[in-house]
Image (cartoon, rainbow, N blue to C red):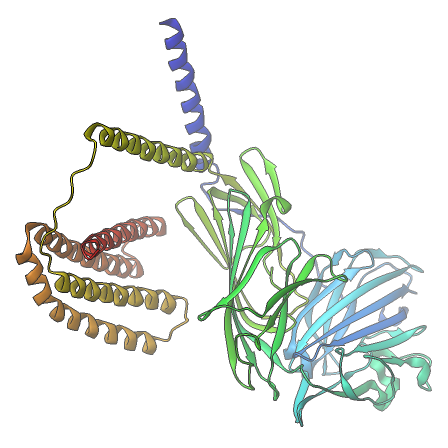
Length: 612
């Protein structure tokens, strides 16, 4: 007896500790769902002392991949000839292409990120100044190297050239800066492999590179804003290609699900459009190198022409190649192709543990494209979490469900150079994680016990009694089930349209037309089903009970739909006490509706079983 009491005491202590460890974290951060890592503030500088700063070396790389983006990387070595330390320098962006600048970033020679901000300052009325801050002041006589990357849209011109696509580019040959440049001054234009009919002003063409060196000009240095280069300040380059044209990702909707069971699931709906003048059979994209179980699908099923290849020059990524000529059709000019990309990642690669808290660092832009992404929405769903404690970059939308936190990031005009790494720390729900396997084990144990009892009773009874056949209304059952399933399908289609309307995938007019069409068909089905319902109810008491239960469930389902609409209306009018109350009540209604749907399906399947 004493041993039994000790066992109960230890069990009570364990259960109490387990519950407290799961509940206490819920009260830790009640004032805010998460906090943000603080960053130091920076002050803008001025152009004082610009004449005492010299750019000792200029190395510009202009990458033209032919798909619509132009990426420019300026590698500058700055020398301070001033008597005082310098904390920043300025880069000029011509105002005529300022609207086409979609991304810029500055780095030090060691790869560390430098703060770069648009000052709004105009010089010579046509140059917008961007200020780049050093990680430490540049002392008199010292040198520093920085790398300034920019990405532009709509700088390439596309013209038909027989069966090929002609692509032209015109722009400044060297960076537009308010400092004197000397020493090695080189600009290299990188063209896609396979480019032909290459034309340029005065550069040296070799394979798919065109090099423009100051040594090929009469000048041996450049004045501020390239004043002494005259007509040589700008260059015109053109080429032709048989398979590369202007492509654009018009919409990308990505869902990243972080599971407490050690996986990250990524599902992305992508719509790509051919804006060029030639057809496209193949295109590619890049995903993280550790990704596994990669698959691509559309409305017709798997896209068979999908392969995954390693990238020797980019160990962090691998390439997904889609060949539409296999079991799809090529993208003609001004046509679109929509598909879904799925893959999985090992959570342990991005995760750090700290007791019941986990920290995950990942790039929100997991899938990378060589094309302009016009609109991108990324949803990060953290399953099995109590709350988010800290996050390095605030989301545009924050939501939560039971044991899940949802972060939504919205972006437009995304470049292939862009990265958006976030670091988030959240508390895991230990109680929820352990309850799932416990419930599963209990269910398995219950099923096994039931099977053992059934087998034992069979042995006791010997041979089971034969089931007597009855005269069943087979035709009425078949027609009733078919019509009822059509009605359920139309109802689910209306719900799906409501979700797409909320996510702006459907216009209000399209949604209204679909709802009116489906509701009209549902009314028609209700009239067609009446005679079959009557026949079933008259056939036997069993069928009568099933039909009556279905009628009750239909009424209950309509009550839930009315409740959801009323709840949404009251929330929009501000008549609910809080958003959390709205979310909780909505989830309760949705669970109840789901349960009703499952019960209706079960009764329909029960009726169909008589057909066998």
